[in-house]
Amino acid sequence: MTAFWATLARDLLIARREGGESLLAVIFFVLGAMLFPLGVGPEGSLLALMAAGVIWVMALLATLLALDRLFQADWRDGTLELMALAPDSLTLVVAAKCLAHWLVTGLPMVIAAPIMALLLNLPPEGWPALLATLLIGSPALSFIGAICAALIVGARRGGVLMTLLALPLYIPTLIFGAGAVQAAIGGFDASGHLAALAAITLAAAALCPWAAAAALRQAME
Amino acid sequence: MAEATASPNPSGGFWHRLANPARFQRLSAWLMPWLVLITVGCFGAGLYFGLYASPIDYQQKDTVRIMYVHVPAAWLAMMSYSTLAISGFVALIWRHPLADVAGAATAPIGAVFTFLALFTGAIWGQPTWGTWWVWDARLTSVLILFFMFLGYIAIRNAFDDRARAGRAASLLAVVGIVILPIIKFSVDWWNTLHQPASVSKLSGSSLDPAMLRPLLIMAVAYMALFGVLLLLRMRLELTRRQVEALQMARAGASAS
Amino acid sequence: MTDDMSPLVSFFHMGGYWPYIWPAYGVVAFLLIGLLVLTLIGLKRSKQELEALEALAPRRRRRTAAPETGGSDDAQP
Image (cartoon, rainbow over all chains, first blue to last red; front, side, top):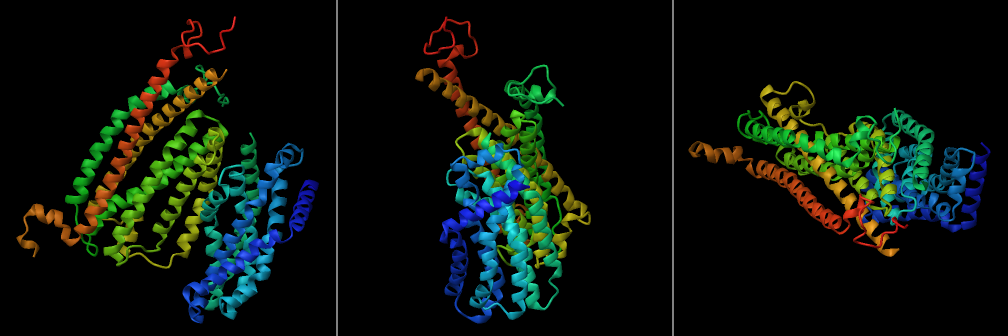
């Protein structure tokens, strides 16, 4: 278990040293959302219809953007091989890296969500649901994305390929996440969606680190 | 079960003996005429029944005939991905050399069937629902499946090391098949456009037997064709790998 | 209108839906046959390449044969 905390601390420290680089994903998150009013027009009612979906899609894309860094740097300087050879479970190490990734990209997105909701004219009934879904669902994005990042580590043009691989896998999270917000806006009960979302995140947290570790070991054979 | 080693042991089990390319060639040569026979026969019968000797639908009239090429394509798309996942699983766990070959061979076949399901689905949609594309559960799931095939092909091509590419692709296929039911479930749940009752009955037995017949015959035809294509592409993949091995041996010999 | 069509023409007419049915069947045939043809062509080419390479290095599987190609180090005395 010490490997878990050690890796978590290390990754967080590296992220802090990199400073603004870690926040690039969040900037992309907000910037991308800004493009939608510019693209479809500023009409409030139209934006209100789209807001939940747009915010969630931007969350997916922003997470993918930051996922590149999850294993690539450690792969290049050989740290990943050391981690694999260490007696502690590689699965725990990967889980720690995912958690660090979420703390650095996912959590800031949750914090930025009210700004997004404002810019995109999300109806007030949807705001609590938006925060809840992003809080519950964004960890799933980090965990599921980790598998794709592990699969393509060391590949050429890995970043774009990883996006192609991850987007289909993100669809359930997107459907339930945005769906919960839409339901709340419509006055319906969103608890079913939230429960499904929570189930996805818990399953992802339990299974994805193991799958990602397997992918890393395959890469290092 | 004994582990398959890199060099097939001739005294091993059936699957180990099959790993020998020459033996695989002989088996596929034996199977091929039967598969071709079934393919041609079933396509002939299927087209006859589908285009001629079957009734038109009460609501959809003749356009229901598109079902006979669309639904089997969707079934084969699923079957292809399952093949991909199974071969990936076998490649990872038992390291059977033919499993990786099967995966590489299946991917383009699956992509074609998936595309056909989408294309015929769109053509079917226009006269039926008045729109070229509709975000119903099946078409959306098939569209997602199409991109999963593309992802598999892309990851195979992303590595110069063939072994690494095979392992990554195999793992991707296994992960994909696990998440696929979840995707399907969430898309079904998300879908708000309900298909007309006569089309949604496809999943059940309430389809008119006169329509079920061409559908099933075409399904068998597609499956047999899948078998033909799979065996041919596996032969192709094996031959290509042999060529590569010889080329590398020559390059190594002339370099020393 | 369909009464004065011959049976053959009315078959192709498909109740007016011919622009949908025939392209659908046509694309299916085109792509499936196309994949088959491409595979067969590729198979033929690969076999030719293989035969050409094997002709250049016939002793690949027989280590006892006299070295006619040279350059191979595995028969050092």
